[in-house]
Image 1: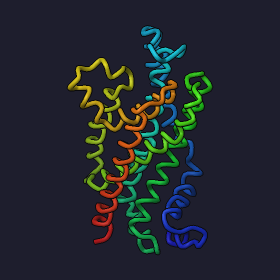
Image 2: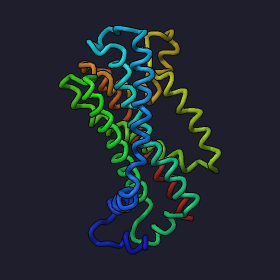
Image 3: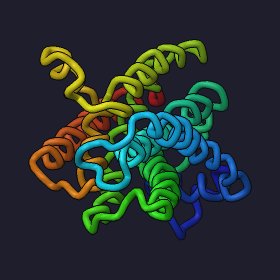
Length: 261
C-alpha cells in the first residue's frame, strides 16, 4: 500500500513524503496540541506567575516580563516541533518500522526522504508556532509591525533544527540514546536567555551562550517581537542558515550510508 501511494503520479520526490505524512496525521492532528500546550503552560507559570514578582522589564513596553518570555517560548516551540519530528518519529521509521526500506523500493531516493522529512518538520513546526503566535497576539504580547517577521523566523528555526535532528537520528543506537538528546536540549532551554537576559552572565559565559542555536533562535524571534530590528537579527539568521545547511549535508551523507548498504 505504501508503494502504491508513493507511485501516485500526482506527486513525486520529497512532496510524496509530505503527502504521506499528511495522510497519516490528518487523523491524529490533535497530538500537536501537546506541543502548543507546553509553551502555554510555561508562559502562564513563568511569564505570568514569576512575571508578577519581577514587574516591569526595560524594553518590553507594557507587556513586562511576560512580553520578554513569550517570544523565547515561541522560538522553543518551533525548535521542539521540528526536532520531535526528525528525531522521535523518524527514529521509529528508520530503525523500528523500516519504513524507509519500503520507500526505497519505489522511485524515491535517499535525498527525497531527507528533504521530504525536513519539509514535513517545517510544516509541523510552523503550524505549532502560528497557533502559539496567534495566542500571543490575542493577549497583546506581540504588537509591533515587525512581528510579521515571526513566521519566516519560525520557518528558519524549524529548518535548522529539523536538519540537526535529521543528522542526529542517524547516530542513535537505541531508544535510550534519546536521553542524550534531552541532556543537551534541557540545559539549552534553561540557559539560552529563555527566562532572563544575557547580561546576568559574566562575559566568558555570555560567549558560550551566544554560540547556542536556541539563543540565536530566541534572538531572531524576540527582537522583532519587541520592535527591535538590528544586526543581531541578521547574525541569528545567518547562523541558523549555516547550521541548517551544514546539518542537512551531513544528514544526507549519513542517511545514504545507513539506508543504502
